[in-house]
Image (cartoon, rainbow, N blue to C red):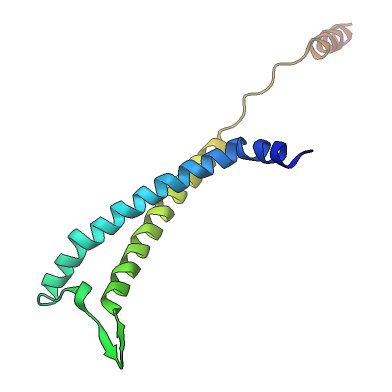
Length: 126
């Protein structure tokens, strides 16, 4: 099998396309969460801590500037994204459990089984 043909089969598989859509949506979701943290949460945290702007928090050691305020914001971004993913997976798992718990309807007997049942009933009646 040629390399290009094999790659084409891999690329058009349903799981790969689903994963690509997930990555794109995840990137957009990451931007929303970053905006939420930068523009809403951190200013409120700054007000609660006496007007501290976390973007400006840093320490200088020699010539190196360590921006630990930005690190704190990124940690909060991560925690929000991780929590949202946890909630989504939890919801999906509960949906799949409900589907598994539903009892399957009994299968209708085949023609052979019906015929054998009739023969059994006839033999019982004799």
